[in-house]
Length: 151
Image 1 (cartoon, one colour):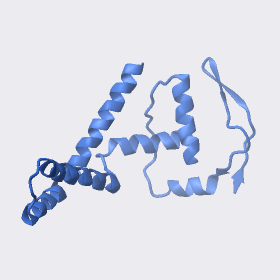
Image 2 (image 1 turned 90 degrees about the vertical axis):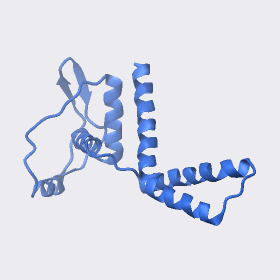
Image 3 (image 1 turned 180 degrees about the vertical axis):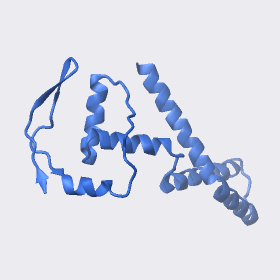
């Protein structure tokens, strides 16, 4: 069972917020079913944003097919969890580590023995996850700095 909502304007504070253009499917059965078996959500987490930031957030939620509050909850909880690094990212960093470890000796005319190569592979296998976390943290720090410098 779904209900369609018409385009309306709602006064919020001093500005107007426009409802999404066109019909919006409100799948109540699916939303109510998701509530079974979980704790009641009776707390709020909020942040003040600019008009442009709000538009960006709404677009991101719309892209995922979620209401802004649902999308924001997902993002906040995902960011609050210990950082999970994509396995593909981890393997990319492992390849980078291997290239860096192998190219330097080759570039300087040294030979890599099969034993040394196996040692490198073993070391990379044990260190790749930590290195992937470290590189991701560097990227996030740079993004945060750029964002803060732009404000």
